[in-house]
Amino acid sequence: MHAPRKRSRRMWARIAAALATLLVAAVAGVAVAYPSVAATTCPGCYGLTELEPGVYAEKGLSGEQREQIHRTVAAARDRIEGFYGTPLSSPRLLVCVTDACYARIGGKKERGIAILNRSVMLSPRGLDTVIASHEMSHVELHARLASGAEVPQWFDEGLAVVVSDDPRYLRPEAAGDRCTTPPTGPLPVTLEQWLAAAGKDATTYAKSACQVHRWLRSHDGRQGLLSLITRLNAGGSFTS
Image (cartoon, rainbow, N blue to C red; front, side, top):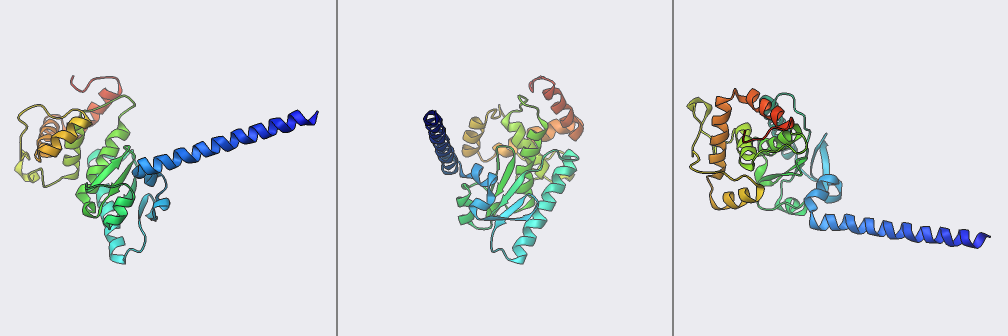
């Protein structure tokens, strides 16, 4: 009478072991194929340590480097709040001061990048308020958009340029019209189109920022953006 029970227990043990093996393999596969996703999930697994709540950086930093990170993050958060109001997002920030660290967590040649619209990675070349707030703007915008609500990629990127007040693509506020390069045709709608266009034309960011800046100026600025988000979340289309 006990033999069938023993066989059943052995069978379930083998099934559990197989499932555990598959789970480990899946996690390992994600870590290899998408190290940036794995790093934002487990910063400590990639040699990062928590400097302050939600902010991780490589170990062995000098006091000056730590202070620079604290200042940059605080200024970027202020810039996000200054535009959007009370933030809805709280992205995990992964900050690298060496290229080796950035490569280890899956970074490429970019200065910074938003991961899955939930976290932000900053390279040694992106450790400044403009780059940090640009990437954090992407996260904040998508935190405010309901599932299924979308904006064109040019609007997302152009808005991030405006929010971050990027002097590479915008004139000073005192200029009134801050456009450096007005758009002369359709702007990239999808991420794939954006990557292709921005890779070929360095003015793509400036053109998108110009379009967004002029739209905000004629739609009551931040309030116009919040109204747009409300309409999109209610099922409205961006083009309307």
